[in-house]
Length: 160
Image 1 (cartoon, rainbow, N blue to C red):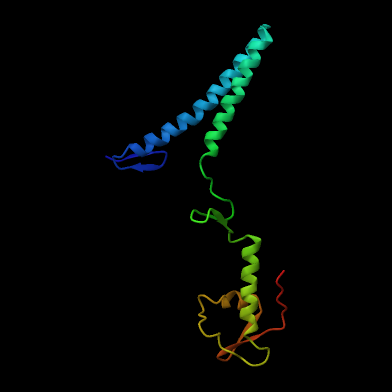
Image 2 (image 1 turned 120 degrees about the horizontal axis):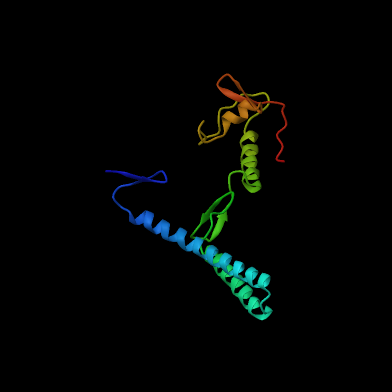
């Protein structure tokens, strides 16, 4: 019999879900400890007890919260906009990053330099329709098909 927990299919291996539940419990237990300490401080303040004890409780609440935050910082987070390379320890730029866009536009500029305004030329050697970026350049109006090759149009191509 198959079981589903939170949309996940379990094939008789409950250890994955147990580990996940333990991590959730540990995470939320830290929050509960910090909140209960804060509530205790507030109750002491409202009852008018001595201030020295509440300062100790407040310090312990801050320490509990700092420990909770430190546990979360221990895990490496996925880098935004790119992928994390574990071998180098650096983040590769994402597809929409400024450096990736500039590199693509530079490659397109070099590809367009191969074509002439009057004489139709075939694609450069080693370039195929799949890896050259020819389609977007034709669709954008930078190149035009003429006979067996392509010609460069008058449309300006800027790197910016």
